[in-house]
Length: 452
Image (cartoon, rainbow, N blue to C red; front, side, top):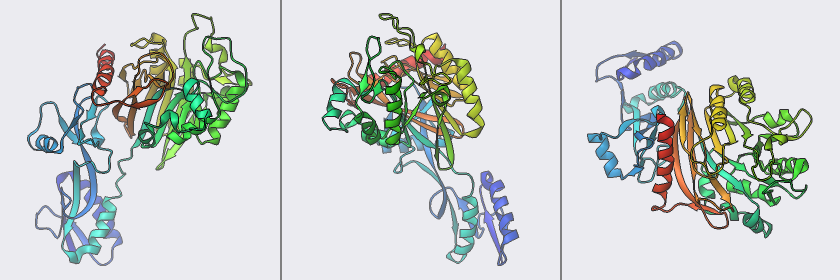
């Protein structure tokens, strides 16, 4: 018997390939693609039949617009009547200069997100087997593959946070934010200290050393990758650096940007999820300490000497070019710039852009101890300064968890979850009245970067 199929124009090429395959392989029936609406099988743009594709629809607005969420009723009104500030489009077609409005607090990546574009096959029950055959082929189209990263600022688990860890409370530093950190596929941070119990302090202004328990605390909070390439990673010398690497690896937290030699320090951590590979690198380039004359560059790893990876733009380009064809995404964690300045410095910009030029999809910056802007550069995105996160230090308490989704085109979307560093260094989520000012600072600084 012959079975007729009607599909919208946008599906005809894919449907034609599917029925050609069925006609060559099936023995008990043949398929024919027709235009008539009274076909035996119809592909419809809803979920009334056997659903073969469901895509989240985003209510996309400019990234720096001070508008974050809508109610479900308002979302339906926008879908039906439009809004001058909103573009309705599949989430997969989002651009980095857009963000998706949350609907009753849910974003397009959430399972319960209500705005879905569904396609289903509708037919008489007698055609169930044939329907299954066709559905399996139409579903073979490469899926909408996305990974979710969570990135935060500087983590320093010495001082009061370290004291609580030594008292046995390993969840203390991140107790108020661990749920949000563990939601991501990969959670990233910068460990702004030595870690362990060996070594002697360097002759510098603020030598930090987190206790050995800090490694397990990071793992419990959901961290997967941390950079040690910063101006505190070797505060207690080479042996302490190697101990930190060992302690973290034992907890299945992957350190980058440091190692027993230059090859290890410059090597990426490659994480494979759902058949897709992401490479993570760590680098540092910070000024000489004005008060002591200490130069972090003296810690640069050599061929047979432990150390950190220095953010020489030529080195970054060499490292990334060597791995680009072997992975799907590249993320660079960059510790650079000047402290407490709202705008990135020239060396900071040069290193970050060199990474994008060499094939990085995303650069995540630290060191300023305050939030800086986000730049869309070339085919990538640069978060210049993500502030402090878990850090007992004087300074602005405003910070954030940056949720980033990567797809086949690079950065699909960034969502900012504002947070506050409390007295003693413990982060918590910002309240509804604290959050707007934090987002607006990032938006304002981002506008400056992207309009100059």
